[in-house]
Image (cartoon, rainbow, N blue to C red; front, side, top):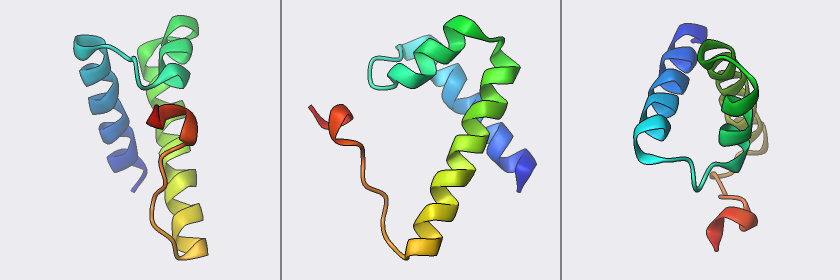
Length: 69
């Protein structure tokens, strides 16, 4: 599972570098501070925590209100 989350995070970062990070302010700030692979591990951790919380609460993903505008 860990390697799948990491591969997915690297894909998100690669896409963000090509198309911009306008809807991902957390990711753009992280990429400005850290190396790509370190940012990928941080993003993978965030994805895992979101997934765990969704399963534990038995609910669907809700996009943060700040990003919906």
